[in-house]
Structure formats: C-alpha cells, structure tokens
Length: 170
Length: 139
Image 1 (cartoon, rainbow over the protein chains, first blue to last red):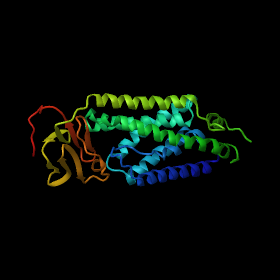
Image 2 (image 1 turned 135 degrees about the vertical axis):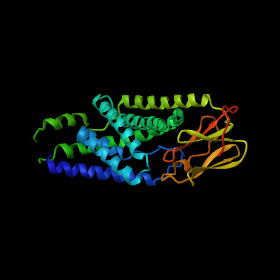
Image 3 (image 1 turned 45 degrees about the horizontal axis):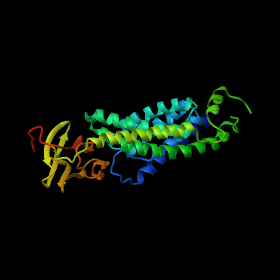
Image 4 (image 1 turned 30 degrees about the vertical axis):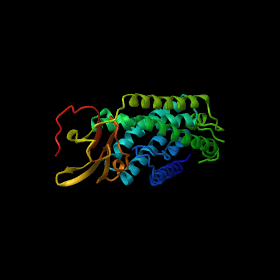
C-alpha cells in the first residue's frame, strides 16, 4: 500500500471508530451501572489489527480514544479509556497471534480485559476496592458485546481481506 | 500480484472465511463463569444494609441510617455537588453536577456492599450493614 493510501486509510478508520463511539453514546443504556457499553468502535480496532497491522491498529485505537474522550467524555474518561484500551490491545494482539481464536474470541477477551482494567484503575483512583462490586455485570456485558462485535468483525475481516491485501498495486 | 513481506505476515492471520473456533466458545464460557463466580462471591456475603456511608475525597462525611428518610447534600465549598435521598430503606443519588450523570442514573442501593460512585466529584455512597462501627459525623 502506498504511503498516501495508507495514511488515508488510517484516517478513515479513525473517523469510522470515532463515529461509532459517538453513535453508541446516543443509545441510552439504562442498566444503571457505569461502564456498560457496546464497544462498537472496537470492531474497527479489531479489523485493523488483522488487516492493516499491529502498529496501525494501536494508532487508530489510541487516537480514537483521545478524540472521543476529549469530545464526549467527563473528567476521568481519558484516563480510564487509555488504561482499558491499552490493556485490551495487548491482550488482543496476544490472542490474535496465538492463532487459536477467531476474531470472536479475541474480541471477547479484549472486552473482558478492557472492563476489568477500567475497574482496577477506578478502584485505584477512588482508593477503594469496593468498586469490584461492578465486576460481574461488566464481565457479563463485556462477554456479550464482545462476542457480537467479534462476529461482525470476523465477517468484515474475511470480506475485506481481498480488497485490502490483493487488489492494490500502490 | 506483488508479494510484500510485511503484508504476508498479516495476511496469514486474517482468514479467507470467517469460522467460529472451539477456543472461542471456551473463552466465552470462561469469561461468563468468571462473571458468575464474582457474582456469587459478592452475593454470598450480601445482607440488607443499615446505613449509607457518604465519602468525599476519601473521607467519610456522613453516615445516614437507611431506616430514616432523609435528604443529604454533598457540598464543595458553597456549591452543592451531589444530592442523596434516603427513602424506604434505600439510598439514591438524585442529582449531581458532573457531566456524565452516571451516578444519577444508577439504580437505588440497599444491600450491604453496594455503592454509587460519582467519579468526577469523588463522592461514594456505600451501604454498610450491622451496627455502627464508627461515630458518624453528619454535616
């Protein structure tokens, strides 16, 4: 892929992830527990991980978290976003490289680690372990949303594979 | 078709066709079991609480008995940042000046160990059971 094409593709991915982040913030989740979210933007990170590369996926993910945190988030959302995002990225790269999991498993692990990481950081900031009370619900919602996002991403990876990696000559 | 060394590695990991693997189901099951275990551990020790402890910046600023209906305002200087209402044996955060209002949307809490957290304002309301451990100071 030529450099300019790569830059354009990455920018598009960031824009897409950012839009998905905004879109899911519009859906009111009234479970009444903080941190429950669909994680739609992670589908972009996941597809980029498989099709564009590790560094590219990392960049897309971090920039998206920064933008979404600055525009939609409260005071702490940047810290939690980066903490959860980095931990889940590391786990997803390892899961992908193990070659034992399809994008579904990778996504489920990513979501679970993301949520757990956020709880750990929140507990540290608030200086209390009591926040662990939220763990069961977050793990459950992470597993479900992670599986759904993983299925969509898996289909996307298979379909886009040829387009990204074969037809260009730049 | 030109072969790019860097891209070949990525290509091998991306599949031609999406297929669910057994390891995926196992992973999902493990996470669900972990969630169930955490839930069991927490609820095994759950009892109806008797007092709502309000902390601000890590310090206890009030202990509100759940048996008495009350309204409590958390202040930062002169400004009211959070409002907590005790009614019918549970505590609820009814208003807050934080931007995301996650604490306000949180459901009512009444069991020992449950808590409502307002991160931006560093306010935590926790339900504790049993007798009073410390002399409470309500401001």
